[in-house]
Length: 452
Image 1 (cartoon, rainbow, N blue to C red):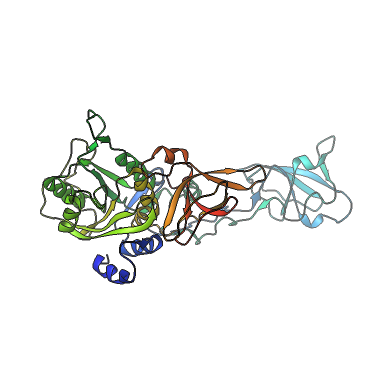
Image 2: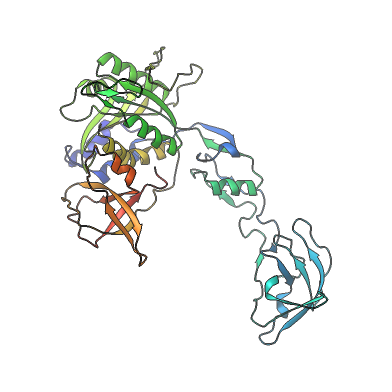
């Protein structure tokens, strides 16, 4: 893992109080390192996991030429440019039961979808496109009904034996599970789940179940972060709410580093907030504090918290859902856990997670695929935007009657308006140099479906 100091030196050309969002993303991609431990899981447990090894197809799929539909199989060389073709039906081929007879010129067989194509036959005409004789002994098809080779699935057209079916670093999707099953593969080698510990900080934060008190608010960040991490496929470690007390913060950071690969906190990184969180981050690790030229989510802390291998008692708050397993080894061979200190405002937490933390965690999980492309849509309204910062505005994308994708904002873009994230189906991403947006201008949108 690269030192924060090393990266900071590279960033010296940038204003440390206003880092460009794209620069931060590039830095984080280089800072983190993938997990190295593998495990074998059954196919029913593999959904959402990341492959640790290439999967080479042990067989060809399909294993033989077969019919793509119910119909009649014959030698396509008999098709003529003009005039109908009449063929005598000499047998029936069923799926899972090969037909072993011989088919001569002027003959065909009735064949079901998936049935093996007999030797010498390469074309299937759908049963609804032929005229069946009164005694069902022959069929006639009109000229131009099919072409030679139509409706035949070739041996290995999906995968050939010895071909790479899936590659290391790929996410195991429902389609990937089906592909593995089609190859007869029951178990897969995957990277172990990434372990992420998270907690909220602040004396004003209430956990669910606590009685309301003046000046306090219920913590929403823990639950949105939990949802984001769960959707990502991480093993989530909830350490609850930690008060602004040095001893409690130190215990929380020490325990989090001992059981996780990455730590996420919310609150305590803005100017004017209590210095305890910042001071503890610096005391226990290698941390940089940034003001990123973005909206929402300007303040952020990134770095490492060193593991205290002598620590013996786990830190568990009354609100924590995680109990330390003393038989569980340190999660990674490195001497530190990566830290993401996010701002405290609810929307800013989600935006900074999606923009920066999620791509970094994917790399730590061993994913090699790039992020999905941003969608392009026409703005249905004018949007005010100052050049010099990246903005992520909550938006609703819809399909216009003419087939054009349109997007409008959810209204109030305050970083504390969490209900706007519920109404939105994506973030309108306005880049650093972008100015005001006029009605009809094309903008890019990070869609929530698939990432949240």
